[in-house]
Length: 270
Image (cartoon, rainbow, N blue to C red; front, side, top):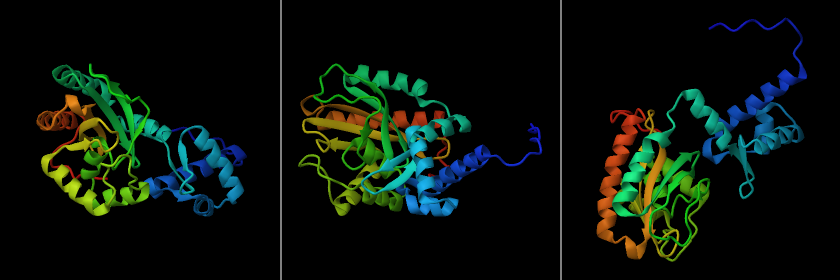
């Protein structure tokens, strides 16, 4: 469909503002999960830092951009994700995943979580509570850590190793409990194990008393864009059950990835 030609009129300040905003968003897209500092964004867009800061603050307020105070860098936010998924026509995974989540919960009685993975961040988008109490239950909208959760390790293991290690370097691997993996060498070995068996486990690494099993789900581009996990108190989820649940999750993730358009021959991308 051909768009009508705009009237022949001078470029307005409003149009210029839109173009500057788009340039900032494109530059942030190129920067990826690492993001970019204010000075670099302003220079690329041909703006003063003060002007660029005004645009970026507006984008942050609208959740299209996020600001990381620890690194003083900006990166794309979840608002862009929502628009991007709609523009690409991706299927909302929840209607597809909910029956699988219900089946897992009913079979085991444990809590089942669904997360979206974008720009190196894991955000829970659906939580189906089990019938066994968890001290700190997960909430939709919460972020999971990459290095200390089953979801995080499953998603990292599904990425090219260089990309996974870069994300770990960016986010760090602080100890949440005495069981948290905090060294790059130990994490590399853990990711090898996860890749070999297809699922990851969290052995009280994120929270004492909590065990989780998780897998990655790929979209039609082969990207590990989602993850699903089962979590329960350690006394209710032993290692044998973890392995059995892991195999069930691997089968579920394979089917869900297929229904999201992924084909096994597709080249995975990070």
